[in-house]
Length: 515
Ligand SMILES: NC(=O)C1=CN([C@@H]2O[C@H](COP(=O)(O)OP(=O)(O)OC[C@H]3O[C@@H](n4cnc5c(N)ncnc54)[C@H](O)[C@@H]3O)[C@@H](O)[C@H]2O)[C@H](O)CC1
Ligand SMILES: [K+]
Image 1 (cartoon, protein in one colour):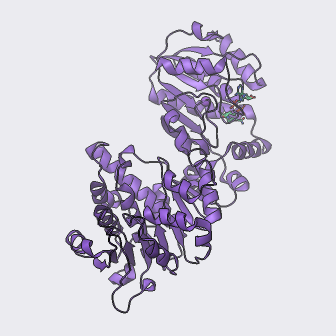
Image 2: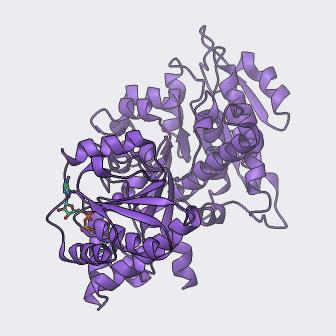
Image 3: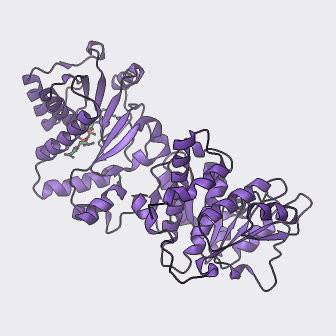
């Protein structure tokens, strides 16, 4: 049981997978009505914790079992002393839903068919549509949903905000803007897509004891799409360290970054790498930046390289007896400018685990993403935001739509681990496994925060090189750590107070006492 409870919140499902899992439960003998009673009872209990019984509550009821859940909630809140009314604009209901309507009405709970009839309420429960939504919501329901959104009344959505596509998070016509979403049993993939975030409000999982065996029977031993949780993220940190070690055993990262025009990017990337705890840090920058980097990171080996007349790195002039294979990992790109093409080509040709970001990605796109990466054997991690993603993978449409699908396709095509930045950063490996970071903060939407991630990720990769940890797990940990540092900094300094330098200083505060 412990194992199940630890993992259940990581699992992400599509509508089809949820249906298959629930079908197994019913086939095993659980009556549909019993499951609905159990689930809706848990919803009603949670609602009572959010809002006390003095409230007037409207229950928005759909034709399917989402509506059935809503009607059970209506009845239970009625018994608990809430002033309940039901809005049900449909006439063809599923059998179970129809029975619950009949019983609710027998208790004297008023039921309305027209939005204009609805009495005032303190909050609404959205039981219109759940994972059974199959098509665009059209009038008259669409207009009702738009009107309900205008009411500015707090809304608690059952399973999903009605109108959101369960898998892609796309708004099908229109959607309820919920203040709370109580997701049932297993996290629906649509709730982890950027395009859904304006509609979800505060999302919680209502666990209704789905047997782990049923989850594994449908999703396989290890689910393909998972949410990054503190448990999974902290488990791949290079802690505790062995009592006997030395700096080179704790990873040697080579950062290749910066230009005369973008000196700050090199500093921020290096500060991210410092935060990772990497044993040794070498930083290759144009010669004119060398003293600047040394002044900020006295512990780093700063390599001043010959520069082009535009102030970009012209040539990697590594110290005597070292070459790219001397390093555990390489992170390349922040602040390089487009003039460092030969440098990016050189690191792509190396046999080292490589993180490519920013101009490193733009240069890769220019060289031809798929063709260029096909030559590489060593691990490659790409960390594009949506703009860079489109340049790298012009034929993959919806990095703004179904980001899970987009990042899976990009990883499969390129053979790289791809981290697609966003409010819900998604990470895929070439085999189709996906990690989604379920928590972040708009405070991170600032210049330089991506540089910090690149350094942090490079440092973690360098420390994991002799360990059998999948690259995508390391990338997921970096994304989680970076996001949590932003959240912690924003909680102490507001969302306006998380500049990239400050972000880098919060990295270690995230793991103190948690690792
Ligand atoms: N499977 C179970 O027994 C349980 C499910 N849970 C809850 O039930 C919903 C899923 O229920 P389902 O009946 O499959 O679908 P929905 O209630 O989401 O509603 C879909 C319903 O509405 C029709 N429909 C679909 N799209 C549209 C549209 N655009 N316009 C109008 N009508 C539409 C469709 O024909 C269906 O009849 C799940 O989310 C849970 O809330 C229980 O919690 C556990 C047991
Ligand atoms: K709903």
